[in-house]
View 1 (cartoon, helix red, strand yellow):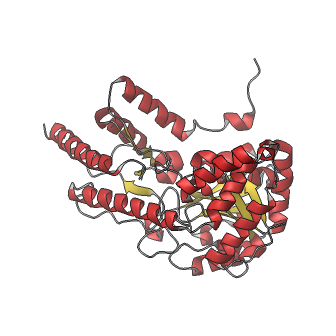
View 2 (cartoon, rainbow, N blue to C red):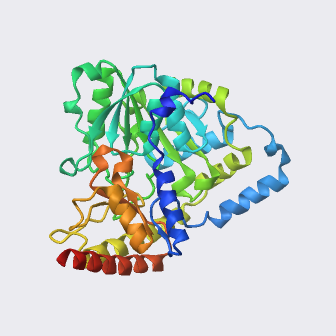
View 3 (cartoon, rainbow, N blue to C red):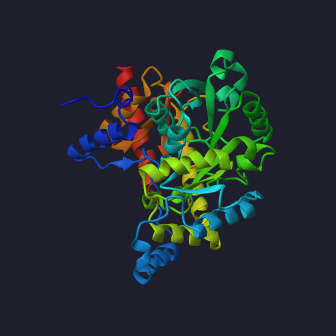
Length: 404
């Protein structure tokens, strides 16, 4: 049997496959697993949205035919209307909006459509793994932009070597950020990104999938609302987190038409697009009153507060407090005191083996994620009480062992 492609061989095992293996081992041991590893929404899709899909599928059999890879005009119009209402950004739904089978697929297809072998992607580290993996599959090269706490998990663009900038084609950014949960407090950063992209002829790939999952009066901006943003960039968003439609696989790309056009062409060769009934239902979700979004944000806020307050009470960190993030559905935590000598993967393995709590090791998101852990707020509220009880007992047992 012939081996698979060299680019595919260069990829590490997928992070969540490794976590799933740990969970399977825990299930075999009859552990009660609490899964906080993957950002897989546990809240239901709004009933009105589900009802609309059922009606569309039942009453409109023509939607069962092949869809348009570009996306139905009604869906694309709903996207651009949403951007006008939410961000004050005016878009042409014919040329500046594209339906995606989730934003993950869109990121991969953008890199496939634009990169040539040897092109560099300026990539934040840590990052959502699809950026790294898709760059490798497209034959591109990666230059890491470290996300460090002293920089509030924003990249320092001034430290990129000139020889890299000459070969760079794409700058990928994601705020509110997965995995660090960092947000952009000052739009001046995005203004500098626009200037930087224009100076070095870069495509800005801005992932805004968590734009609606924010707390404490923080409102996430769009890159496209920044003066000049439309000249250099595209933005990805999705119904997965906003409307708990993760399994429906529907998202979109908006922005510069000359950046979008090659992606549309690429998609026409490799997929048929999103099921028409789902596109039409997504258009309904984006157009209806957004009270359901506000309600789920309050659920995530309650869970965030419960978990952060509890972790501080049991002294996850002995001499400092964990801060509450202003965006996303994640906590990005340093390894707890007493365990900093361990790698994040080793700690995650120990934790699930001893407690049944599954979390994502930071190193799975990049080398600069080492020393951190990502916890997703994706289980019933009462289970966070169980998490805290188990962690308190776990810390006591581990520290007792070290004391012997």
